[in-house]
Image 1 (cartoon, rainbow, N blue to C red):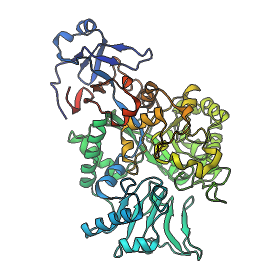
Image 2: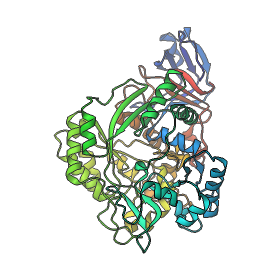
Image 3: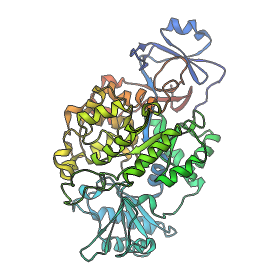
Image 4: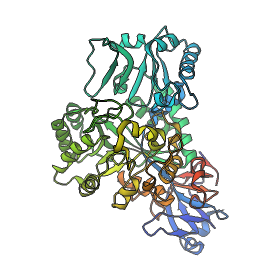
Length: 538
């Protein structure tokens, strides 16, 4: 992190300053005084506001944009999984031999590890040549002496026999509500566990281990131009690591975090503490209460009215009863708290919208629908979301990761998937996000997410619902002004205007002027947060 002289303003001149204000103003200079923007406009305007006393950087035509904001990510989990787990992603692996070999090699290299854990990809089975997960026997052969697990995203875990014994999962085991244990014809577990990842007693990392992993991943985010994130339910250890890094001056991101309350009892317990959304400061603050209405699409656990096309009889799983959803929504809204609800299937979404419709004024809190907009977006549902003042938080990188397999899972319901174009045309605020937890590392770069929104290409290079494509400007707004709005931060960040934080990126090329195919590899020359250079150089 490069520290400038705090008592001297900084003037960036002779550039293309894309402010992303309401008028889409493009200026030639910007003046930074301390942490905030003092003026934006011509060089003469900057001089009128005290720019004569400033340190001057000639941009030589470079482009300046607002710092990017990831509206839904898992910083702690991503950091730990990419730092301390075996790499079982596909790609680079293309078959089970590669995945299991990576897990075995990690076990050999780490004899001290109580669990051997591999981080895999979304739709891992579908992306391997065999188109299946490892069998229990194959997992046992790879790691015979201790519990082992492969994470295929956040919703599917593949374990060995030692792990099943430790977890007590056998033919008589009853999984938690909304979870599922795959079984063979005799009723015995196959090792594939659906929607159980959050309940597994995996080894805990120390604050020191967590802080070092987070520092590395935060630096990577800075290299992409990310200056703020909305972090999904970090653990107590993760929050302590964030605070430690902040004290040490090693946290280059603004973090708003959610707290997970999985059921009504957890909500009631949380409300006793009296915390309000926004508690903290502009660097580290509490934002919303998170809960899951249903499961994920990758585990065929999102709750739909109709069965999954590839799994007759399976309509997915609700994690909460309808009455419990309604009461949780009522209590949280009544307490003035922002709600962050995971919702995937159409049955789950309609139940959730019914709960919000019973509130007197749901729009005041900017309640969040995590993943709404991905599937089954009818005109009636879009209008209902708008009328209720709710905000669909979309994850366009999922389009690339598992868009190829949606027709197989959902049939005709896959049409119009990831309906960003229709949501924006309806006048909705749609924040952009990665939802990264290690399964799709490339999604950490907002430029990859923007490429997905503009190009609409899947993992296998197909076009998915190309009519839902947006422009690069619209894609950038999802990661700037829209992401700031859902965080109640639009007066502080998201655009380059006087009085707001000097969170910005300096780019050698203007992303508006490059071919969209180059977006995934796009990187800023410098990232500035609060007036300080946190990546690169001006």
